[in-house]
Length: 205
Image (spheres, rainbow, N blue to C red):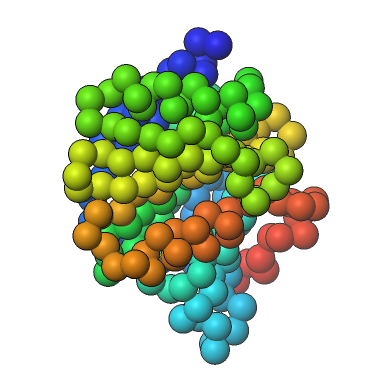
């Protein structure tokens, strides 16, 4: 469980760093983990409402609910095997979602429970108890707050075999009421690839 403990505290550091960030990032058509990730615009009409990002190496896709969510590829990896491939930022509100892909050394429930314990030990953090969420049969999530200024939530679900997907979302406490709903919609759009990765590869131009 050493890797899991390092994962928890690495996430905690990211939470603190990300809670105040409001940097806007320009979308890119290709890049990411290895040579396979891509961003797809399904049509000219849908560019303002739907964007798809695919990472074949880590086995996940992201469908953004609106173009207001800007995607920043980080390609970070830790010695423990934790990947932090992307951060998504909502430029208007300052909300953001950090995606982490971890080795499946525990179930989503165990990850969420351990993470909750770690956050509660950090000054200023309060959390709800982990509970099932309707992302999948095994998905678990909880809400948290950092002082009076930052609200957030964590969602953990299974990825492709051998991996777990974890989404850490934060937004300013004074954000508009529709911001948490937009965060939920984005989290629902993060999921493991359902079939052979090659089925999602975009034509090279």
